[in-house]
Image (tube, rainbow, N blue to C red):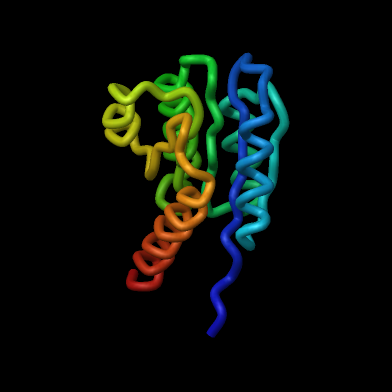
Length: 141
């Protein structure tokens, strides 16, 4: 049986106005066979959560360059929990992430963190791994 394609919402939360990296990642994920939805710039965390639910995605990929990655990630994850979707939709974070913040993001609930310099070739396999594990968990329930 062929598994359905991974659906990912690539989102730019907050006031960060630079999206070149997010678009490069979005194209790489699309080229890797994923269905990609891009929110555009300057989205609120509530808009991101709503779009993820409306688009029935497996993953939200937050692209953050502003330095507000901890608070923005926490707000998105809290929004998913409030909507009852935290178990269905994983959150991954990429961008300008200092090494000291990776563990904090994971403790908040980020399924993966992709700091600046992460090879594009490493992102899609990790996202597939996360989605596959979550799908298997849901099937076993």
